[in-house]
Image (cartoon, rainbow, N blue to C red; front, side, top):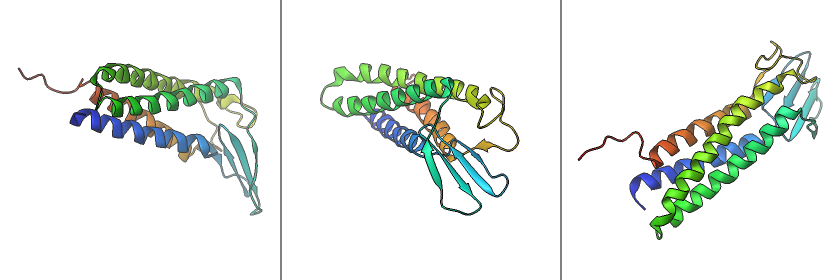
Length: 169
């Protein structure tokens, strides 16, 4: 495996981990209003009311967030497959091109999540408009980790495709 493929593989694995953590944590949208805390995630929503123990339940997702969840899972799967293919490319260089294309598809999935997720801000629990959170809500650490995974995937794809390298003859 050449050095650039090794770096790209490491970045794809890092992006995979960040995306998985963002999926698991219920901190995509958070609010600290009125003595309580609301944490909304793609898989569950948690409430802490006046210092009591947290109460968590499965999230009731708007259509936009259901689509985002599906795209995020597909992005995680393609990122995992890309990492595995880059490792296999150490012994079979013929799979390198397939790894690059699958990584590109994963990057597209993550980009689509970044566009579709804010459309769901109009859900009843939040009360905002598409792409506009009300002042009482803000994005949480899960969303920040997801954006980090997206950027790492973009950089990894650029390295894998050797796009940003000078062409020396």
